[in-house]
Length: 193
Image 1 (cartoon, one colour):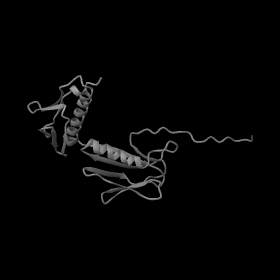
Image 2 (cartoon, rainbow, N blue to C red):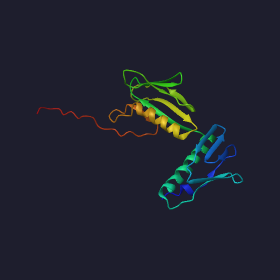
Image 3 (cartoon, rainbow, N blue to C red):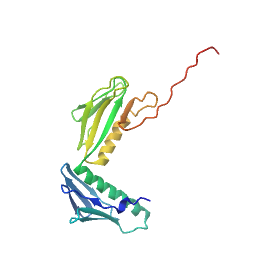
Image 4 (cartoon, helix red, strand yellow):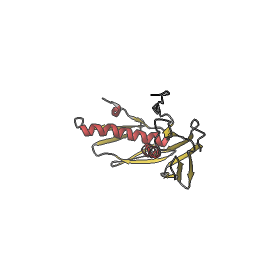
């Protein structure tokens, strides 16, 4: 059983946390985020110690226990996001595949007969290190960064869904730390039957 929900959330000096009813607003050097908490979960801010405590009054209710850990993790991600930010590194493998940023959209050439455009959400920044692949061994690399971990993860998943890596040659879009299990292709036998 996870005990993560019992841990307090440390708030850095540069981060301010406000609580208005059920709405938690976190502001920091990189921006501000806000979220509505579930009514079963109580959030308390201890400004003297610089900590946030998330409490569950009904410890026997299964849904309340699930929400307790989820709310604590979401608030901790908000605090980390406005102070440090989050990023995901991605790679694009395949001959002739490339990525470029054009008027607020990411444009992919990923083996289709047409380019695939994906609008960049507000609050997300894209940094393209290597725009085009060089053969099957040197991938195109880009980084997606932002302060909202949920929005960043969803955008990265949408990018990967354009062309998921295939198991034979490994072509497609993947996370930089993702391991793609490779399959062996067809084995041709020589000789007469």
